[in-house]
Image (cartoon, rainbow, N blue to C red):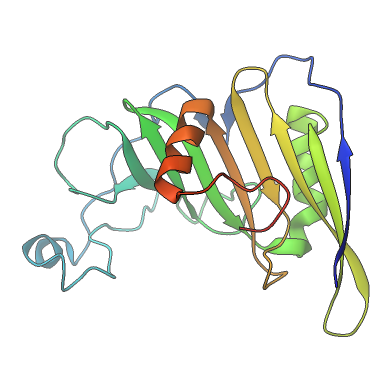
Length: 207
């Protein structure tokens, strides 16, 4: 059984930084759509057949985004869910992966949703987030046991920024300590996610 303890911190008083991972909330994405890949033509002709494949090429020099619907339409970004991808030459903070999901409202960044490596990166990730955003508004420590019977503490944290942004850091998932999540979203995006998910966003528990 896991045991938990919750902690609350005073509200943040310093100005909030709305830029993270090179992206600025409330602003358009600073790069273009990814280039077509080897399967682009076949994918466009029969997207159902290639639904588990990407029609895009992986970036080699600069970040880019993939549209989950209607790729290569050359139309302005609206209210969309996109995959942002980074070349191997760029190492991302918070995760070893080279991609994550973003959401936009009227073409401007409104949400970031990322998977990280779980409990193994907890200390460095929380340290980096505290350095950037200050102490979390709320946190919860939960004690777990690994496969060898040794105990460890997983810390989930929430930042409520005064500019209407919420940050949710989940150190580990319920079924695995090797996967965790980082979410950052605007008030409006949070409302839309609640409606689409059919449930409120978790605050101190794994998704």
